[in-house]
Image (cartoon, rainbow, N blue to C red):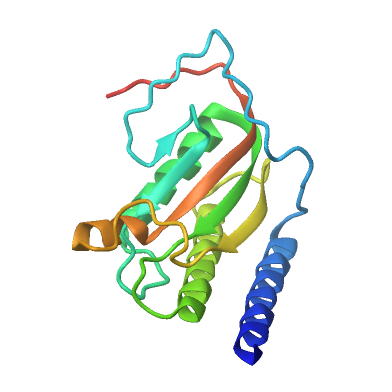
Length: 180
């Protein structure tokens, strides 16, 4: 019972820390964060770049190093792409950033690590120029609780070490995504 209480205190503390980081960077808008409008009929969205699927309002950046909270060059490139894509083609919206880990390590450690990944991703998106018209309304870590792949293989664990960016309340510019 003591372990459960301590774990809850740690998770709550991390959530408060994430909220404080966001409050320093921007005013958070929490209204209607679950609605993803259909793109305008004049907008054709065919996006061939792997991290984002605007149809579902989600970007995924995979492949953190084992026990790594910071991004390597390829993940950083993906975040630069996402910031540029949003700035160029979306008028405004809100983001939720969710960190994940594979199943190696303790639950406590993985919750902390996944939150650190999400916080670092939020900071990097702003460093890479994500406009203030995009509010980051939530930063959370889910540890290894929601794998997207098996944890039985090296490749599966690689895919599970990720951050997800949920795109809410998107207002599209008159633009066209082309699959190259």
